[in-house]
Length: 239
Image (cartoon, rainbow, N blue to C red; front, side):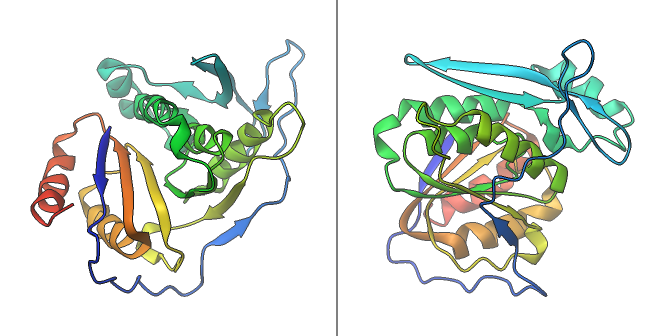
């Protein structure tokens, strides 16, 4: 994971203007995820039902559970995944190693999350934000894919505390190129979000416009070559 502090006292840059702000909801609405005859959980999509699998993360005596359409656990898994036709399965529905790594990093700082305002970019299955919320953070999970947010909601609901109260998570469909969230967050989370070079200027604008003074940016990245120029440029600018 790559952890940097925002530049204290740096002038805030105005966020990019949008045609409309990201839509957010804290409603407990859940997507259609019926059980099959064999007990398999499925996600209803316009392209048909997709089988879902469960991943359990156990750390420091605690456990979290999320569902996903498949997992990528290594380089060859990723190459095979990217070489297949994925027209009907958004990448965000897959469980990626960076999400697991980021969740570990968040859990390692368990005492640091109480009442912290957190923005998660490209939330996908939602594991990092869910772990942060379970330690008391107030999280806004964002993704461009509505289906990914459906899975986020479901995963958030399945990780409620024992008293049944909902985690403090809001959900928003958001396009990085059309970002207009004026809220300043104490922490911005991102798991493997730097993969697209054309998107990096938009991400840089979000980092600078949405992070509170003295806030922190916590990223997990599998050392993609495309990530290095942005990270090096930010380091040179004092991040």
